[in-house]
Length: 343
Ligand code: KG4
Ligand code: ZN
Image 1: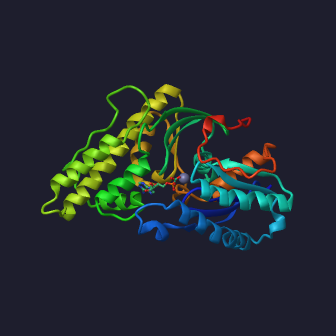
Image 2: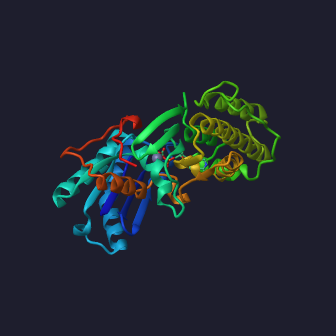
Image 3: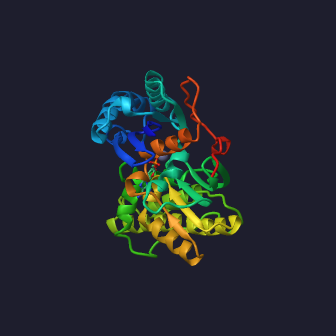
């Protein structure tokens, strides 16, 4: 089965073609970062309008890259939620309409399921079951994954998502949006241990996260360290280092607990923040210490992309699932309510 995947849930238009026999045939991504940068974050209405401009040209580009014609596509997948309502509607309307016109099965995919399955596109994919740490701009979740669609939420952030915390700290350090990669880059120049932040919610039992206290601690440190309103370069880098270290250590502690809680020894990290190399390093070490293994997507499939949607769609369509003739956009959507596929 050859599936066209469409991702438009936030500020990236992602398109891909996935072949169940040959794997990923082609993909393309258009990032709206430039468009939103001057506002310091995503402006939903601008995002929707840009998806309208970019989706069809990108589909054309991906079909050309894969040497296929639209009539060679026999399955269609689009991101149905969660995400920005208007942005989702663009992908849903275009995806469902192409599906109807070609008379091929079409399915709306849960964005976080896409992230969660992205490591299965790699050469050494994790087998089921596994624990997944989903860390994106909108979500921080620990999930027990028994099979595709069999998800049990065992922990989540009570306030900011990890990516959101990175983005806010980036602003405090005068770094442009999206801040995660910029904070990570600046942290490379940081001197270890000059600044140390708390590892939030690790003294209490449980698998939930909270990043608001860490964010406030970072803000206070930034303000205190300013001399006549200016932060010197080394202190900026030291704060970036300390923040990243606190987030990574917190995740290591929670993931170690999740291993104990679930009895599982495979850990998947996915979503934008899983691109963070320090986090990967620390989690890989922890997994090894516990006799387990860490899996993550290739760098370009950590952040939003069409390949993960095409892949998740292909798995669901092959299992016989498909949607009625409806355009669905679900800005809020609980992963635990998804239809389970047999393992
Ligand atoms: O998964 P994603 O592309 O979009 C959502 O579904 O939200 O995640 C975007 C988030 C942003 O908050 C961005 O700052 C963060 O992922 N991010 C990173 C890194 N690369 C992206 N955070 C920390 N380190 C990185 N290297
Ligand atoms: Zn995402």
